[in-house]
Image (cartoon, rainbow, N blue to C red; front, side, top):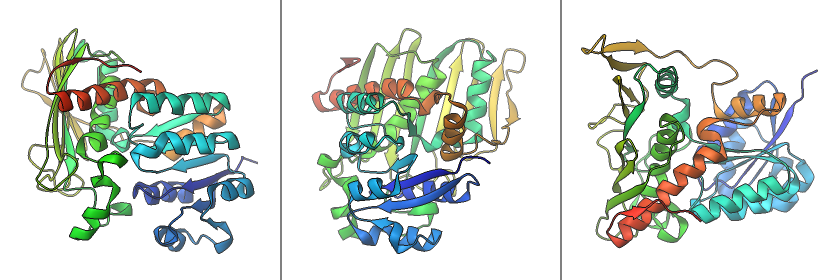
Amino acid sequence: MSKIWRVVGVNFDHFHMGDLLRMVDDHPEAEIVGICDDQPERMQEAIGNFQIPESAVYTDVETCLSETRPDLVILCPATADHARWVEMVAPFGTHVLLEKPFAASINDADRIIEAMQAHGKQLAINWPLRWYPSHVMAHRLVSEGRIGNVLEVHYYDGNRGPLWHGADKIEREPTAAEKDSSWFYKKASGGGSLLDYLGYGTTLGTWFHGNQKPLEVTCMTDQSAGLEVDEHSVTIARYETGLSKFETRWGTFTDPWTHQPQPKCGFVIKGTEGTISSYDMESHVRMQTREHPEGQEITADPLVAPGRNPVEYFLHHLTVGKPVEGPLSPEVSRIGQQIVDTAFESAQCGRTLPLLDA
């Protein structure tokens, strides 16, 4: 018989926990054996959605992990707490799926990597944009050399704001009090559009760039009056091949999963022999080549098992004993984090900086 993977969801700071638990619930070889958060009210929706018994609901993480003995822990804490939570969970000898972004800093990213390596377990970082068929198709075409060598990656992404939707993208309008109290809008918790969304662009951008690192980074942010954090950032990264741009926005006119805003959310990749545009939630990519300078729409292949979502993908790799690859890997996500760190520092000091490291 196939192994049934025991999965626990720990810390509900990020609403994506509900989406990830649904993937576990839908997986025929996985089961939710526990959930844990120090604020019980935040678990009520998951308890109802997945019929989680009271005996599997915890408010203390050590008790939860000791009693449930999970194979995999899904972590969704505030960005500033990622390293602390991984260091807390890793000694229990469990694999970890960490919801984006990777970390609050490159130092924290290295703490996370070291904590997992010390206990011999795998770490995967989930970037939801990795599961859009259009972006997977764009990477496949790039890898096949269809547009030659990548010279530039241009990224624009975001949404109306992090409090406008909950688990399963259910729409809601936040109150002023919710905005004031949310970690998304707290500087000390790693809030802001830059830290929320830039890692998407720089991590998938690294994937498209063949894991190349930029030489230097410039960033500017726009901070609305009365807020501790930015809602708009523009980052320019200089590679040996030229300039790439990564732009984040809370406050798009519409959410890309309902109606694409303008500018459209997604990526444009320019190579030596052509270009590819790949937009969030679209069923195709558009590719220009020297043979077809007018451009062609190419239907994106549907994602198939075992690569349809991060839970299915990670459990498959654990089953066959292979490390995760691409944006989910600590190696690629670490480069993305270096760019984010440099962009954040650049915005603070107002000048171009060489790529930062720990």
